[in-house]
Image (tube, rainbow, N blue to C red; front, side, top):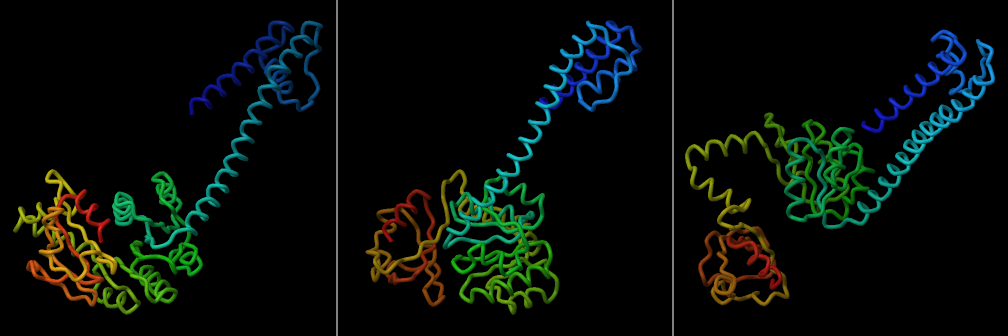
Length: 328
């Protein structure tokens, strides 16, 4: 903006300089002086409206050097900006597509609205790999500003989903504003990858959750329902709600609720919780254990055996959880 203003003032200064120069040197009217200045600096080649004296000819040559040089410089900068901007955009999109093509075990977020922005923020904070799909130019600009990987297009389009690495992805989240579009996205994604974990947003319309589940969604979330439940819990059980917020999002206590999957080569496989050393060595509490078949054990006793494929729900310091993650 500042450069544009300076350029405009310089251009007006040259016009004023030429107009007054002809007015003083040749004694013409200001209008004739302006006309002579314009045809000189724009090199349009119209005939002169006043006969030029030797001093007038010298002045015209100076004006040509100043005016024409300035005009050519300005147009050159404009052309440079247009060409370089276009090339940068093309190169940037090519580089973006290349990085997206290299993704695996990532998440695909369809829609960058109010909910999509929150999801992307949390995934980014967790250092999780993800790519965003949206077709709104305004949203695309916001995604670029955040530095997220993205593809511009319709999320229900099979080609776009394949380009987003659907067959190598860990999960897909459909959170576009239209319920119908979310249903189409789920249908397309499930048809392309039968094993993909799919989560979809529901507006709460009656029967919509059933349709999304039939379309292939594994989980259907209604933000309005969750928001209502949270507000009620804050009224009825404020301390419990505050504690959950602290453990899920982190806070002054420094506690986190996390889940870790036990691999077959882990040293704690087939050991009891007591013998695993999780509490003793890492000062972590095992809140629950989810078996590989889906059974959930809440508040497991010290003699509960840990098996391959178990998911441990842990409460404790985030740094300690990360240390344990290296062990299992």
